[in-house]
Image (cartoon, rainbow, N blue to C red; front, side, top):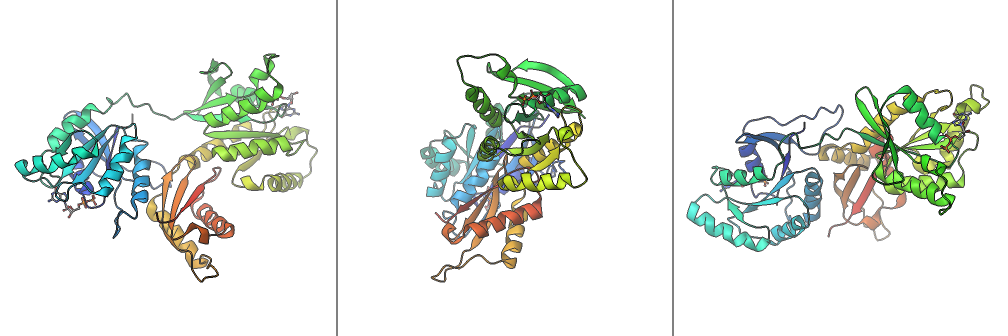
Length: 438
Ligand code: GDP
Ligand code: GDP
């Protein structure tokens, strides 16, 4: 069972790291057992009374003028907060509330995570109460005066904190990969589903989903659970009130939205049709990991070059999805069907992946040294200050630049290409957000 997570948030220099050190003592950072992955944040185990949890420091970013980079600090915090059970917002009691604190507080209030307000650097008890009281104006409830250095007040803070944490055992382990099987009618979606359930242990087959028109099947392989979201079944229930389009494309759209990985099934005999392109567009818009499953491979007459010719033709039609792996299968004979699940594992991993800020900036520096950003006619050159991954599923990287308009499509593609080349991301779309100073 994963431990509950507490995010430590605040402007630079308010004492976040000092507080993390106090809470975690000399316990080492948790190294997540995900090969090849460096996390954006370090997780330190901590406990209070009989409760274990982990703290994640969202700091580490110090700029001369921190208000200028508030959006960046906020995005880092946002990424940490999405997985946190509670947050401690640290402010500096000696400097009093700042505009930056207010801005972070306003944002925190709009989040659903419970927040505790820790007013740090309050060494003296009487002074501390006065210093802390200035922070009621942030609208986050009672300010707790603490001294992260000396430990004063942290007991009261932690007593309150643990009431917000789920008892361990309540945090669900979300290890299921949600896989949508989508494609035009008759490409072989149901046959593929049958091939999966025939080859793998089907745990519940089929179970009713939350909505009337959802039929999910869960299969297990090597301890990994896959929830297969089938979009074919309903078409068979004769439905006179709705046109085929409704249950075709709209059901596919719904399934895509619920999934982590899309199995985009096409018919080898038909190639990529306009309807396929429409589905592909939606998959991209939703930012899902994707595997292009070319079905009915048994029915294709082939020699040793055929597969390369197909790869070339299908790839050029779907050039905007060139990051997706392509696999040639037969749902009918079962050929390579199990291999699809290997690709699903890989794509799901890429989709969830978090890359450390340090590594991202290394890639940027390397990319910029090979190929400097374009210069405008006025002689102004584009500059990338900093990049950080703000989200996963799909991996989303914000690039802080002097002026986004100085980076043309070509250069943006080049940078994306560099991220892919250096960092992998097989099977998943990645998003780059070009942000100017604001
Ligand atoms: P972060 O940038 O928010 O992680 O802040 P740090 O933990 O690096 O602390 C910034 C500065 O504040 C350092 O010089 C610390 O020594 C100081 N500091 C941290 N906690 C306290 C405290 O409880 N009392 C006082 N007086 N100074 C503190
Ligand atoms: P769906 O509408 O996408 O669910 O497609 P079905 O699974 O119902 O398959 C449509 C038709 O294609 C059926 O007649 C299947 O027997 C056939 N079919 C499905 N998969 C394959 C395959 O791998 N090879 C061949 N030759 N036919 C297939």
